[in-house]
Image 1 (cartoon, one colour):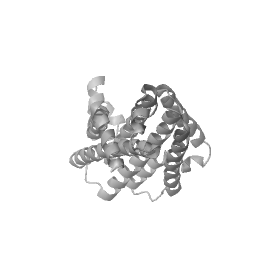
Image 2: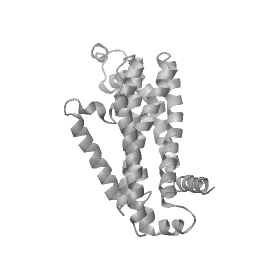
Image 3: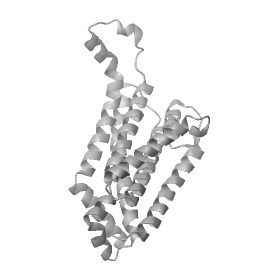
Image 4: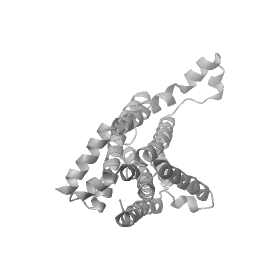
Length: 252
């Protein structure tokens, strides 16, 4: 099947260029170390300061400190990796002429784009599975057991959040021939979304609320952000559709 052959090609390319290894190592590293940082940070600060008085200022670490560290670290570095690993996925192939060579074969432009998005999304999913398992293990060992269903849902929301920026960067990589331009445009969108999100209730509908929803799930807070979830999915689909419309009209 052409689609599966193209998808295998993307995975081989990720492995050959070490993108797969870099993503897995970074995400898993922060997944494993986040609970450890939450647990031992007060002790580390005491060692650095050379005094025990910090025990009065700093409260004892809790399971939510571990969850907070995990979400903060994986979302921040995962977002950066989504930009860096996606920015050249189309632009670089157009620039080098490899896209034209590939599309001479019986591979449609829709398949070309879809397999790139799917391969990156599945790689992020695999990284999150490993990071989530490691973080869950150390959270249970160092703190207390947490709800498995809530933990899985939190990581699912984190994955959707990453896919939003994979799709956005893929769109900009399709539009431009420069990797830097694709990354710059994606980062610019993040800044715009951050500014817009600070205006009233608008932030409740943006992808960043998926991270807050994940936190709520772990604390037992019943506040959900389904509209932000639906909008995130719509952004992903819209970016893929626009990428295809633009790409099919481009001369390679």
